[in-house]
Amino acid sequence: MLTATAKTYRNAYSGLSKQTWLLSLIMLINRSGTMVVPFMTLYLTSPEMGYSIGEAGIVFGLFGAGAFCGAWLGGRITDKIGFYPVQLFTLTVGGILFMVLGQMKTYPLICTFTFLLSFVNEAFRPANSTAIAFYSKEGNRTRSYALNRLAINLGWAIGSALGGFLADINYELLFWVDGFTNIGAALLMWSVLKPVNYKSPAKTKIDDPLIQSAYKDKTYLSFALITMLFACCFFQLFNNLPVYFNKELNFSKPFIGILMAANGVIIVLVEMVLIYKLEGKRRHMIYITLGVFMVGLSFLLLNIPGAPVAIAVSMIVLVTFGEILSMPFMNSYWIARTQPSNRGQYAALYTMAWSAAQTLGPMGGAQIAEHAGFNILWWTVGGLSIIASLSFWKLHKKD
Image (cartoon, rainbow, N blue to C red):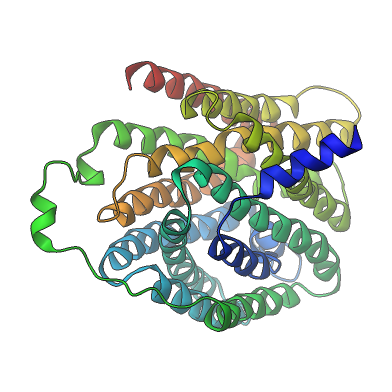
């Protein structure tokens, strides 16, 4: 039994390129400092800062607006100059901006630098997604994205767990650690990953009818809109859920950090093996539909009466398995529609869908929580997630 399990794990991780592993290591270093985002709402609503949940929601909204704009520009620049310089620049400058943001105490400056930080940080994502596609093969592309997500979530687990304890000492420490890990990731990329001799596609190729603009692909635009709806719900996990755990369920910050870290730990242990077993067995949209439906159920679970700790743990487990089933196959879905010359556009549009959700989700969720209560919020996002799931299924039938 143990031998068979070990073989399955070995097979799940085999066959991936050296560059894919290096990209994932760089992402791990970067995301090990992920502390600001999961604790930003708690930081802003702490007695030291004194802002309301609604005001914190507006800050998160600006974070999403900056991310949306950065994703669009990052995709365009990636198609013009290549993914390597875009990743190196955004990691370095993003690290500096994290440290600067931690020093901002007035609301206008917090809003301004939150927008700038997210603009630069999110410009990294289309370049990173394009790099993974470049270094992977069609037969292992979903696993290559899953490995990258594993690095993100392992870093998330480390950052969330450590962040909970650092937040108990001083919230400002979170910004310094996040900044240094960004810069550390940039230095690692510069030292171990060679630049690609990238040449921008010739302009005449754009007229080729086989090379479609992402912005004219109606099916893909529908996919992006449904993804944005789902992401609006999913992002409650990182901003309004920690506040709910703290203010409504009276969980301590270290325990909240452990709960958030559990999401990453489960992904690290399960996702690669599950993707290895599922990849190529069914169409991508089937797994996406099921995963998004599970995320919806996880939020509805929060309104069920019972022991708070048991409900919280069950919710985290269910939302994590929903994430595992949906997100790697979302990446595979969009990449399958691309060619090298328009990959940055598709990556940008996908990232923009998530970035727009970072504006609408946290800001809208915070307003619902403040004016109608958390129970209404969980009914709302749970219901919208299920609607998104059914919409993905309808798209699967049409595609």
